[in-house]
Length: 264
Length: 316
Image 1 (cartoon, each protein chain N blue to C red):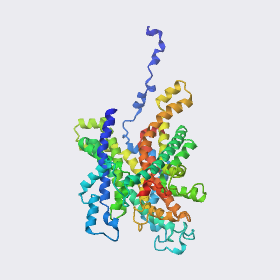
Image 2: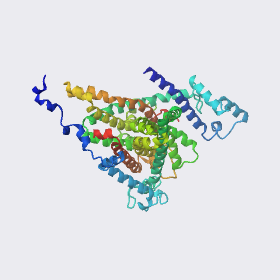
Image 3: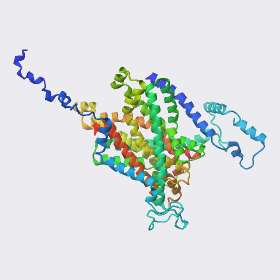
């Protein structure tokens, strides 16, 4: 186990450098001169330009710039934005909001997804199961931004239950609706995953043994079936936190949340 | 204990009809062996969901190829600002957009771009991912290690996020470039699945038998391993066609997908966001078209998975 963990962590190192390099390279290839953009219509003298270029290491070759950037990251220096604010400050303000949104979404999808998937798996083929499947298919096929707009329109504008947009503080209660929207697609996947896993385990040998030992149906289902069915679901939840952070970009755009997506 | 005292002992040996051997004996050997694909087809065509989704997909493809057959109204030249965000009227069943264009006509003509991106991206991802994954899984070694790590790198960057950066770099945004950009970040998933599937197929008895018979490695891969390992890739390809259409819509919605002069559902939904409070129908109808398309591919993917995955079939 230790060997396996160590191997996986070692494998992460080239992935980290590869991914940062790739993103750095793509941003590097963006058209336009960042320094010219910094000054707009009235460019300063060549000497000033050179000075500024040197300050941001823009006079160095690409690979040197990348290494300096990585070195900066490891010493806690993430660079500065166009307006001169340190990137770490901007991220420190925005990241907690995105993280809060993603965590809330993760909580919703885990709770409701497992609940619905579990009941559907126990009643395979019944009306609850069928409607859960139909709803999950619908949620997957409607893009998140459409769900977001419809939710915002209905709850925020039409019925006035919540404010259509989120304030700068982004309190927990304001984030409930955006988190539900963000969680919707993953919720559908968790329902399907839990359902398949539960109905698989219901016919497993250990369940038959537990029933044969005389355990009550309730205990068999909650302790033996549910706990074993959660293994793939927990794996999915771990991976999904990452995609929720990405999905937050779109959700933040709809509800005007000042998270990471709003800083770009 | 002498056996003569236990006349019932004879019953301890089951008669041949009661044993599983009987079932084996009953097999008609003269019949041609049925392939997985024939079995899959048999199980698919009994599912109503298969026919519903297939008919829908065929219809959508038909609309994409011949949009002119479904509407006489031009989607971008018959626009009149006097009917901006207007309600449905005769000849314009779904109303008008902010620019006063016919919503229905724009949906019909937008089908092509959305479907093209989805199909192209699926084609590229499936072909490339399956090829790379199969080679990595079958030959292993250094090639496998490199492919897996490179795949991890692209896998680590989320598709939409990577596409946002890459789309800003690309000078010309067409259906092909959008599909290519989406593929760049989506191929590792297919490659991983193909690799795992090829790995397990390579360990089967028929591969060992072919090796023993002296069949070349390349021929084993093409003739025996790939046909037995491709099923999960086909399933993921069907489902991902739907997700690519959603991804294109998301990019267009964010303003970095297809340029606004190309009609696509994503563009129309993105443009409708400004008028959602006054006239939600402008947003709803393209969304419905998009969702039905994605839903069709998802349903087809479900049926195909059930048919190709015997484990799921046994669960019934």
